[in-house]
Image (tube, rainbow, N blue to C red; front, side, top):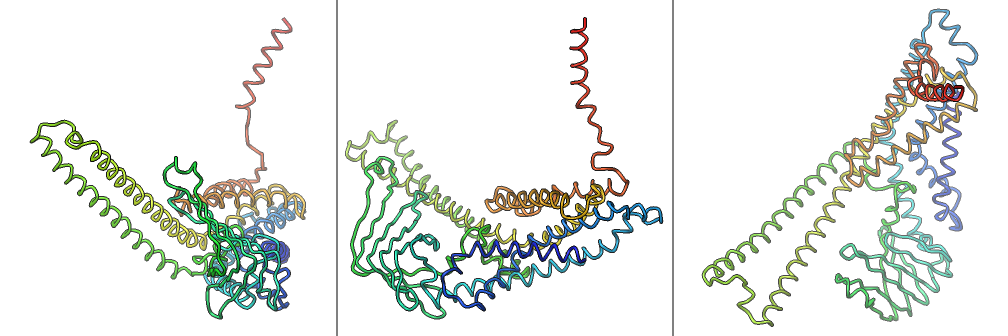
Length: 470
C-alpha cells in the first residue's frame, strides 16, 4: 500500500506539471491570485486520474512482487505451502475494490470537476476579457486566430494593431478571412457566453473559392474597409480543442445516466435526419422520373431519337444550363447532408466512447495488476530500475493502442466499443499468459522453443561447411 501510494503521488505530481504546461498560456502573466490558480489546478487534477491510476497499479505491482521474488520471499511462501494465487488473493480483492472506486470516481467526480473547470475558465475570461488573448502571439479561439501587438487599460481590454484570421467552410473547400484593425476594445457581460470585440479603423479581406475549378485560377477576393466592426466571440469555443491537448468536451461533463439519455436523443435525431434525407432524394428522383416519362412519351409519338433536336441552339444551351444547375444543386444537397450526418455520427460516437471509458478505467486497474504482479514475480527485480522500464513500455503500448482505437472510433471507422476496449482486448492475453507462467514457475523465456526457426539456418550452414571441406 505504501509503495502504491508513493508511486501514485509521484506520477500524479508529474502529470499535474504537464497540465500546467498545457495551460501555461492561461495562467502566466494574467495577474491571477494564488487561490484562483489553486482552484484551476484542483479542477483539472481529477481528469488525469484515469492515466495515473493504471500506471501506478502496474508499477507498484511490478516493484512489490519483484522485490518478493528477489528476496526469495516467494520461495519461503511456497515451502510453507502458500501458493502464488493465495499470496495474491487479498491484493486481488483490494484491486477489485479500487476498480469499483475508480468507476464511481469516473462517473461522478470527474464530470463535476470538468464542469467546474470549464466554468472557472469562462469566469476568468469574463472577469478579465483580455486573458483570452495574449500579446504578440496568435491565440486560437474556435475558428478564429487573433494576434495583438499591445494591450492596455485596467484589465488589458484596449488592443492595438489587431490581426484576425477566420476560417470558414464552404462546400468543404474553405474560405479564409483576414481582418486588420488599428485598435480594438474587448467587452464582456456577466453570465454571457460571448465576448464582444470592437475593432476600429481597419480592413476586411476574404478569399473566395468558387465551385468551378477554372474560376479559382482568377483568385477572386472581397475587400472592404470599416470605421467600426463588432465581432461576438463564443467563449464555449475555448473548450473545443482536441481532447489530447487537455480539452474537456461537453460529453465528459455527464455521468452515465445523463450520457445514456443524451445518446438516445442524438440517435433518434440522427435516424430522423437519415429518413428525411432519403425522402428528399426520393422526391427529387420522382420529379426527374416524371419528366423523363413525359419526355419518353413525346419521343415515341414524334419518332425522334434526339430530344434536343426539337429545339434551336439557344434553347439547347438554356436546357443544358438548367440540367447542369439541377445536378450541381443535387450534388451540393447530398454533400451537405452527408457532412451533417457524419458530424452527428461522430458526436454520437464521442458519447459512446465516454460511456465505455468509465468501465474501461475500472478494468484497466485489474488488467495492469494481473500484468504487473506476475511480471514482477518472473523478472525477480524490485526497486525502481528494471520495473520502471517494463512499466513504461507496457503503459506506452496500452496508451498508444487506446488512443489509436479511440481516434478510429471517433471517425466511425470501427465501433466505439472496439475502439475503446482495443488496448484491453489486446493486452488481456498477455495478463493471462504471465499469470499462468508465474503460477507454474516458468520463466519469462522458459519453455519457449525457437528451434523451428533456427534449425533451417543451422542446416544450411552445416551443408555449406561440408561442401567447403570436400
